Amino acid sequence: MSLTYNQIAGRSAERLAGLSDGVFAFAMTLLVLDLRTPELEAIHNESDLQTALLGLVPNLLTYISSFMILGILWLGQQAQLSKLKHSTRDLTWIHLGILFLVTMVPFSTKLFAAYITYRTALAVYWLNILAMGVALSWTWHYVGKANLLKEDAPPAFYASVRNRIIFAQSLYAVGVALCVFNTYVSIVFIIVVQLAFIVGPRTRLLSRL
Figure 1 (cartoon, one colour):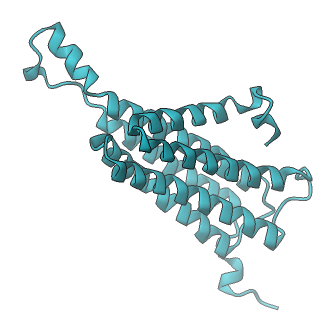
Figure 2 (figure 1 turned 60 degrees about the horizontal axis):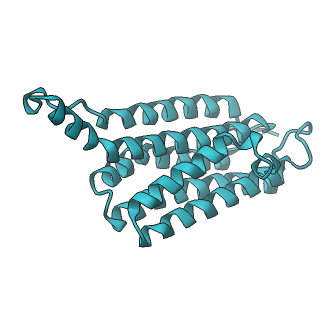
Figure 3 (figure 1 turned 120 degrees about the vertical axis):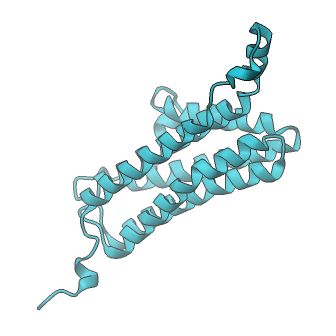
């Protein structure tokens, strides 16, 4: 019995992981382009330089936040792909959807940095993060439904990945809600959440997720 195109296409999880590596690396590199040194013509003394550097704080905060969220998402995606027996055409397109959202992060980051005191800019930024989390959760639901996990995957692995995604998105939602007080409070909270996930294995709560 011959296989159809749709049965053959997109089955290589390794090729998908390689493409993801490239897209994530490119998006992370683009983020730093908005961190420009102050214009030489505008700097005449130490005070001018210090004032100019303070003006870069919104760009720096959003850069740190976005770099970490992309790092966390990349780790999550690679953890998923490493445990697959193989991919499928449908799963590959879902992951390509994640990569599309990843390429939007430099834009939402730049928008938020330019209008960091505006709740609308924060909402666009958060929606970008939320969409990536939802898409990653969708891939994991598909993996479970299609029985694509390797046999050597730990029994609790599927639930652990799912719970970690839900927990992270819930905390990000809390961070956005804090914009009622101040958008700077929101972005600092989001950064703290990301730092908690980065050092998660060293904390009792996150090490169980």
